[in-house]
Length: 276
Image 1 (spheres, helix red, strand yellow):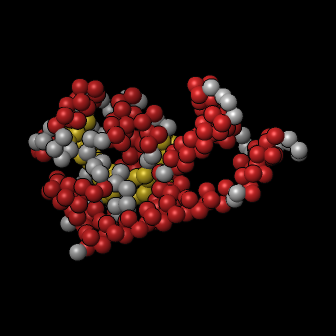
Image 2 (cartoon, helix red, strand yellow):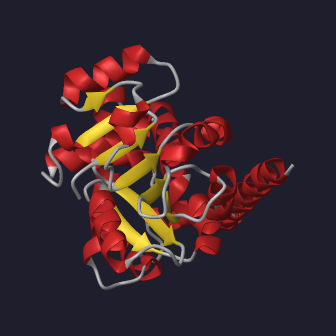
Image 3 (cartoon, one colour):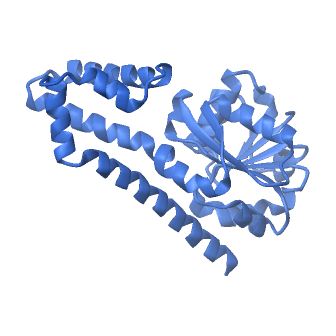
């Protein structure tokens, strides 16, 4: 890829740019960034990453192999309409717009496009995202390979059908918040049982990291790993019994299903407004 144009300069765009540069996938001179009107943010990106920034649309989009749509979903319709003359069938469109379908992007642009729709999560900021990619039939194998390379710079990447992205949103897109919610509860419990805040944080963080590493490296299922820690009549079993009595596992399942359904609703709402 010779040139990447990024529309939007928020935290996700910055995380992706940082990942690309850190992995040496592209040079800073090959990345061009613009946004709606936040000159200060563009200057910050230019200063921190030495990428090209500005509002000269010809400079931003001319000869771009790929154009990344990374603005807020609420600004997507106006932004896509504003740049549609620069979106061509030869250019790969990479969308990180939550809830905005590939067909909606094409409808807003008024033309058929090669589109990769993605769903990373906020852990992209530290190169640990779980990202799902969905493509339409106009994306070539070479374009797909290039896009996958981009998202591999910020973590794990999976290829899915577009209709699965709502489920991905509920599971891994919103997933970090569920883990943080658990960490909140662990911190509160630590305080109540008399542990020092700083020490407790260290214990909690390492416990979560260790458990995640075990899941990643072990051939055992989560249930098998849990049972291996749970001795009959022991402390872990006593704690698990409380979780089961309060139906915590089912609550997590319901949580993910509800988030996935909400993602679907938001997408349908956006699509209906586009069609009006």
